[in-house]
Length: 103
Image (cartoon, rainbow, N blue to C red; front, side, top):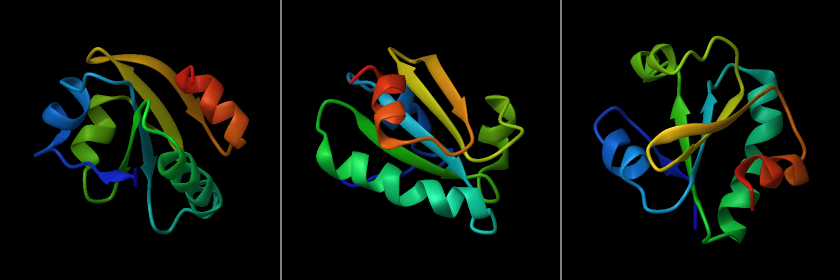
């Protein structure tokens, strides 16, 4: 399943009310490390149906970044049952992403 674009309009439904874990990639188009991590996040999204993968552009959705304390990007945040269950800042490998989600 491809990564979902997450906005303040769909955040509650897609993330907080999800019945499966959700991996969120906080990113920005000008961020070099984000560009390095993005293909790996997309690969994970396309290979799994055990959890959802969403992307939040911090320039477009700054309120969500502030609400969840994202001060550096890329930041990956895992939500389970509507609550944060894990976090990683910076570029990480695919196996580390899967470990973060618990997949």
